[in-house]
Image (cartoon, rainbow, N blue to C red; front, top):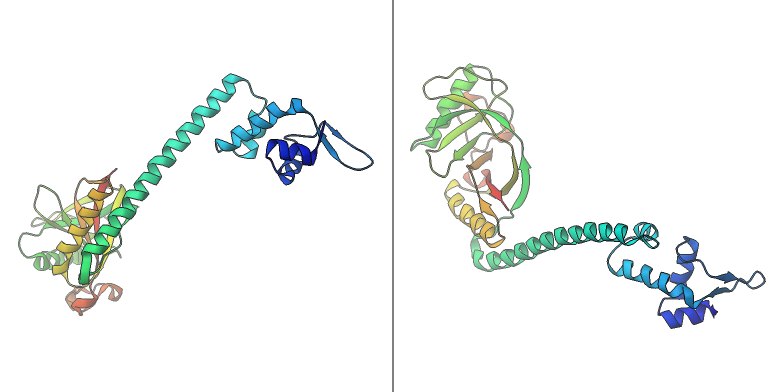
Length: 268
């Protein structure tokens, strides 16, 4: 038999780890001297220790190792299948993060004085809105729509947005507390929930939004994501006529203090 120090040197497993395996019942010594407390191990325990070390190397936790160390081949194969699936998922996630870091560095180098906006992927909830085609004058369309919603007393305390479908005319949208009657192009609809929405907040003038959106699209392409669906411009701080009586928290008359969130639905 081997004393614990000898067994540790032979197996290249630390004394501390062998003691820990003993304490949790994973690898008790073959004998413990009652007088000295010395632990002794047998060569016959090496296969069990090697099984423990193999499972550790494969990334199993101690609870799983305790369950698998004496398991038959069928149970082990099932555990290996599950572990392989976990590792593949981790590999995919890590690969996506690596592509995002590389894309971010490239964009940072190319952004120059314009700066670089952060992009996050998050879910966006469904929302009831009134819509109106924007045509060429977005400001006038918003004024008409906000006026109509105000007359209907159905304005929700959420920011308005513009909807930019990939193959259709732009719409302005105002959030509602309830459905309202259609009138002069005004319609009520529910913006669908989006599970993976790329979002980037821009502070400043509206003429800079096109450049920010292009940055986002380049970043999405570099990270392997694909835009799919209607792009939204959500106006978190904007200018509006006083008679619309919109919440003051949304309003600013300073063009440099405008705050807009660009939202691009994506697939991965």
